[in-house]
Length: 318
Figure 1: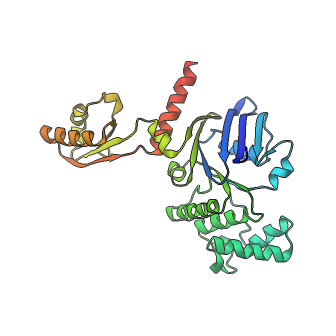
Figure 2: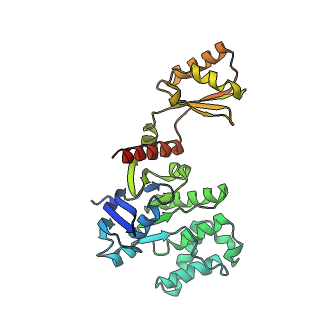
Figure 3: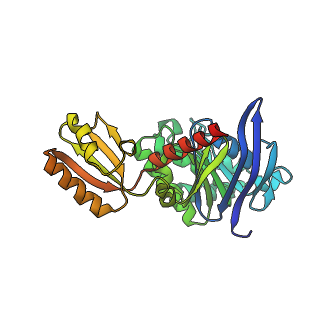
């Protein structure tokens, strides 16, 4: 289809007896950020390596911008960029020198490589770094430069494999801003991450992967709705009253999560405002003092844990 950048149907890959991919299916729309979430060992990096032609699948139909990753690997490579988990920069060179070097490695002429380096330095806010060596860059600056290097050839599709691992919040925000600017320019991004907040911030659509398969797919809001919609959080002044507070909620105790250290109980609700007023009134009548009562949507962390736990129960029952 013309609006599809990536198609994966029934992808399989084994390392010895271990199944890294077990019939994985995935569709990514052009000009979007598609997040792939999963724990270590879920198959995320294997998927990226296959899509970027670094690894051959055992089975399945896998295409990037209409080209088969096995039969037309060269055509795929001409159209993609890859940012792996580890930086591929020369630590002793400056930012411009690194980008010019990558340009020449991609067979750009010397002048073209210089022009492209200047464009990317400006695009990623690195023009004032001068000839400062990369080893003196902050984590966020280094990752932005690595991202710029992956764009030397202006790829149609960019693969980002856990791009903010190890970065502090400032560095992570810098990379997020850079990714948003790429998609604004029409690039398709496939993002693998363990940071659920990152997928929530960046991804137009998210696929949750566990044991080499996609177990859920949708927008962040659609995935959150799978856990039962809104939740109410209650923080008590006295942790010793958590048990009594749980008993006041119009829910089975198994539906309420309790965090003793934070004096917090959390529960799903159907009617937001009725639940809020009802819980506040019940606490007051029981003489239980709350420091905070709030309504919220489920976090993607809760969604992920819910979905992966459900999938494991299904697999164990088969």
